Length: 187
Image (cartoon, rainbow, N blue to C red; front, side, top):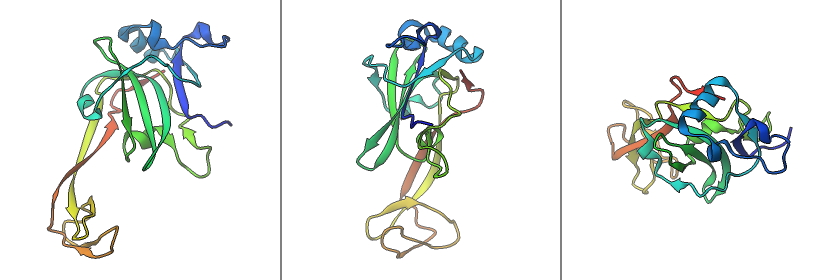
């Protein structure tokens, strides 16, 4: 099995050509939803190269979209995923995630399997509920390290310096974003 780090939903009639046609370039939002529901999508290695508008993932919480391409990228702090999506208003957007949410839903990091985009990912993927945010309390150690609060009753060691952080100390909120999989339809 080859390492797949880029996946694009392409039209059925472009499978045998040297230059597959991305679905998002020829299908409307509603047609992409129908493709996802019918399982008619075909995935191809590659890039859409369409100049999608980059958006902040927070803006997609609760907003419907269709994922038409997924790419794994190397970043300064580790790998992250870029998802290209068609919005109901017809815009093509892209958002990035390198945390424990959307990124982990797409990137296969099981050492027993080939690294890359999970085999279970089928495009296009209709996400009628968009992203969902999981919020949690943050604690800040004296050394400046911020980390999720792990216990409401017990002090937890700082991940950087090892000093105990009092359980009652809350210094803010953090969030992890996920694809809201309720009724998500995969091609």
